[in-house]
Length: 360
Image (cartoon, rainbow, N blue to C red; front, side):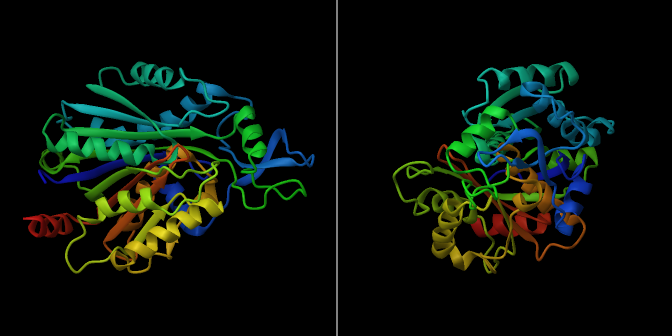
């Protein structure tokens, strides 16, 4: 398996708060950030319901809005590194962004990377983009762990940012009956569009120890797969892709243990509920209660590419504040473009040691 990979820092910028800890506290309290869009209306003539960051000018659009969302979480996650005398010399960046959709320009990821370079010059030796929506950040974690275990880098920053609030995006969602609304012509089983960013820092355990950074959690396993039966097609999804991705991550589950905490991007759409239902039936023995999950879309809306890393932030906060149900947390993501990804983390390195012994 190679050296243990730890999460040592995190950051967030969401409609619920401008940092990781306040965001996690708001989700735990069940606070909702839903509001009316300042100028977009639905086909019933009612203001569209959205979850909008109150700290950002509502008229700001495009890559400028994404940058305003992204940079606070990056600064928060990087702060523990800059405060140390021995900053890791080799740090990579994985940026999770939206899959292609209405209202999203193809050049935005490159512009975001340029903005990061301007603000954090020479901070990253490598930069990569994962443009797969909901599963993007977890795919980034999967790739980063492999790179870190090969010793090619000492640390990796995984960041995700997304916003569903572009006018073209909102119009496309309503046209596909995915926009939640109360009007007679609106889809009651759609989702609330949201926006957010999140970031975590992954580090090899030996590097974290040398830097004096205590781990927030340990990455035990990751998984990635593709689902051929996707939403907005004439097919019925039976959860094969999600089952494969989750099964790969759960291979690392220590003997005799069960996952106690599940975080996911369920957003009210029946498609996602059905997909996870089939997956949970197949893998039920790995969970203390597969149906007892945290789906924060009911607080900050559907935040797409930002969701995976933010769910990791919530899991780390729950363990740090001791309100997690147990030491093992499971995070999964399901993209409209077919990507599926999952990550299994533990509260302490002791669980990682048990997993290594089991694998040996």
